[in-house]
Length: 358
Image (cartoon, rainbow, N blue to C red; front, side):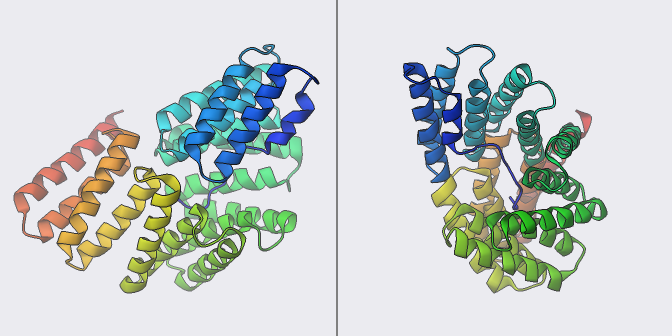
């Protein structure tokens, strides 16, 4: 995962303005949400889930016009995403979106946040046709409600750019990232993690267009910002290591790439858990590198583990599952296991055909 902006969980104290002093349910909701937000920020997603489920249940007892239910559901959906539980994240984001539209109206910035978050999830799942109209709607809504230079507008620009990048629409993605970078630097200063996120995105577009020097410069600046702001063991820093490793890998700097892949993998396993899609992505990248170097005994368990994680998180019929199976087939064929390779290639082709038929 690159440095996309997945926004929506705000500091729990914002909810204090909604409280009626002395009400036990209000106080319980605030305590649960504050605790859930704090756990989310430190990466303790199990505790965050427990407390935010409780906050959502308390919010169910409030008036249908109370906006706290939408806030709690949005936060809970973010936790499910970070746990790799995409089906639950989608369902909960849709509930949050419906709650916010009902209470706040169709054009409120919080509605835009829910649209943005749901679209982001669709992009992660390769559901691009569903994501684009949501991202465009969220961007237009934010520009109208907040002005063209608001930080949330930059978030929408980043996410729309990431969608276009995933579709190889680089010419459309690049100006969106450049505009987002200008906004974030002006609003947050040159060394904020949001700046690093946008640098990562713009660097990936440059790398895809073989602008290697420009890409490396931006990736390194992002790493420097994140190591200083968040530390070298943070998940966002790990994502930057993975991104730089991909660049090194594509330019034949395999030793440097391997070291960064392994560093990113250790960070993701520690911060996201061993079965998160981010772990699978880095496993896949590292396995491909090892296959290229004919280190098949080291590559095979990484390939098979990446396939298993992606199937569990995304389902059997998914483009990323097909990608991992196809990469495994390459390793099998290069190691002389042609019959197994043919089966894996056939499976990857069948997955892609079923996706196209949908």
